Length: 214
Image 1: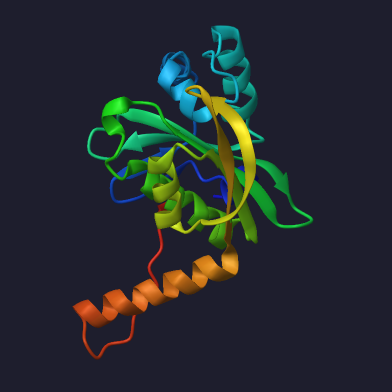
Image 2: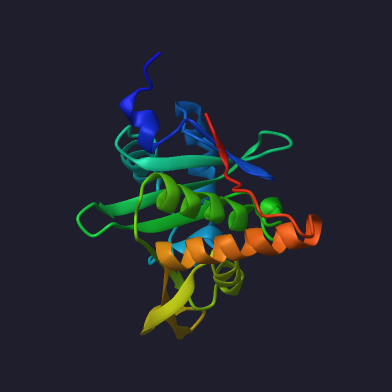
């Protein structure tokens, strides 16, 4: 049976240890609407402080998350299959092999549990090993320290700052620019595999390990 062309660049499923990335379904809309009505989520992720209206969320959902032309996934907790967030690439530039990365963990009780870090790692692996991209960039507000730590753990590095670009809590904050390169990420991945192999199987050569897609 021939594999549909879309499955080559956006498989229906990407499985990790603690999360599963799935293509979006129409019934995910209500959760996304609820998340983007949260003022705290707006504070962390949006340039405007007001939450998005339902109409704005619906446009975003259909154009950026549900569209068959988008590389977008729903993040599910592996143990329960509960929908906990969204992640996507935007501004895909095939000529230069780059894209921008976005992620939102919408369920507050899923924050700080490593789900966002793992989903980010899976998306970077997808970008560099399956899509063949060279660079993934993102921007994050300076006060979102938890997100910055998660991005660094996943393989991003701080590249620059837009000084005092965001007004929050009565003061101005920097917008932090971060990036991950395929060359750095693949080298670090090989080093991790060698280290794990040395710790678990002394004297044996490491084997390639990937994520499961279907």
